[in-house]
Length: 255
Image 1 (tube, one colour):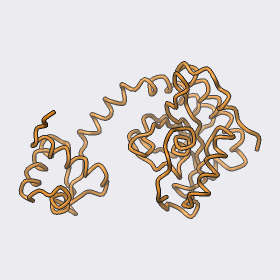
Image 2 (tube, one colour):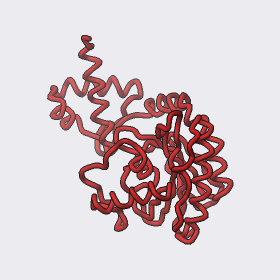
Image 3 (cartoon, helix red, strand yellow):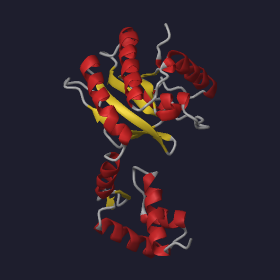
Image 4 (cartoon, rainbow, N blue to C red):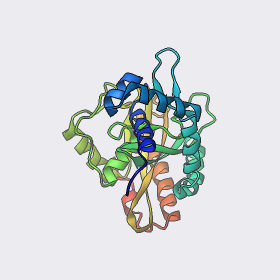
């Protein structure tokens, strides 16, 4: 099927900006897309006029704009998983006192489709629409351990706790499958600890990951066993809501 070249070039520019949260210059975009700088500038001005990109006044770099956030929020409202999981996220907050999150796999990362905040003054809030790596977040490890996806070839370093050795990550993912939940022990952000469990859909297909995040000083390792049982219970009940009937893989292992 033939495509409209002008539209395709504008979309290619947006695709480049998607992978560069710090923004890209006109020169960089022109070089990457093999286009004239003047053409790229015209595309960016048009996208800017409609709110699809914005320009940093200090660096003069362009990044994706707020209009895309609005469109993304509209798309999120269409997610059946998000709608059905919301009561269980609230339950997680009520029973643990920590922020609760729901994520799905998107472009090799964990994409946060919903969140319910705790009323605690000190809390860990990721934000709906956030993208996070798989290998060092609890939600991401669930998607890796229970989904049909392989870890990235290179595991990026984020904190001294981050697992960057593939063999070590493989062992931890196996442990995650055995006990039914994943732990992020300050591996993505120092001072933050997270727990997550899989949410299964109809036919035993992994629908997403549900979990909690809290300050490590409050969500201590001593509390992990009790908190993991709550996370597993909520994930299992949400899975039942989604027509999944075999909850064996959601039962916590000892230890």
